[in-house]
Length: 80
Image 1: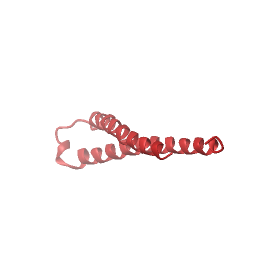
Image 2: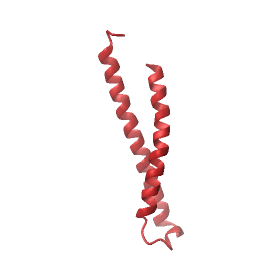
Image 3: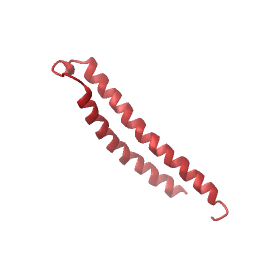
């Protein structure tokens, strides 16, 4: 284990970056889909601006993305 300490550190760093970008991708993709639904359907008829709903969508999807990517992180740590 001590002979491969740098390999463990590199794997942990790459895994951490993948988890971070996974969370960000989930939140941004969900917000883009929500914006498209709000903008291009009849849901936007009574809506003044889609910014507030998109902020709520982003925060909610970021929370869900954190939970999903934590499961991925636990699985990656268990494999190491």
